[in-house]
Length: 267
Picture 1: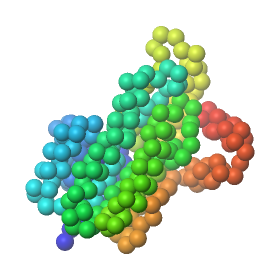
Picture 2: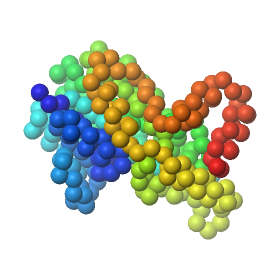
Picture 3: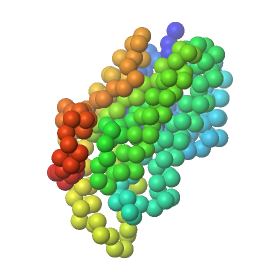
Picture 4: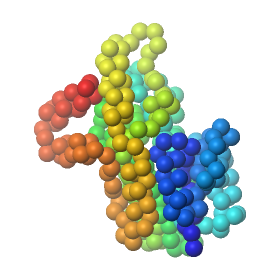
């Protein structure tokens, strides 16, 4: 029997890549996005769901369960980028980022748990970020939201284990997606003390994305996780230097590691 997959943020980028790949493997995929009418993706059903709306989430889960009677795998992929100096990042922008990157994923997990618990089976995969393991200048809020989702995933993993529901965090590094075109740009529009450094950091970030791998690598990993009898809690996927940076944080003196991050964000 084909597994039923629900993946949020499935209209483009990593979400679209995962959805298309899993469809080729015979899974029934339901994707979500805010405006499905804007996209022509016949391979899987794209449902309207604003991850920041509890009403949309409830409607989406109810719709899928009315057709399939269960959801085997939830992939929390929807997210939004946010850049800007912390001093100038508005409270509304911070709340918006947390609503999409943290509160929304928590809400949809909670909505999926009852049906998974009833079947004593389920898999929840959170797409986090390697940036959830350390802070980068001008991406502090984004790093914080992804770090929070990592911790939430760990706790859900422990709490749901007795119901045979596995919770996995997948932390990608830089990949070629369009997230940069949809990010919140939170910097003073009149006068900023950070303009030059901020602009250099954006040029650096865009260069890293331009030179990054395509998201098919993540899709393959997700497929392996779905078919694993005992998946790990944490997976990191990306170029060696990005994954190794997590190791360096644990072994290098703080100030030396900070200097490395500062240089990385400028080059």
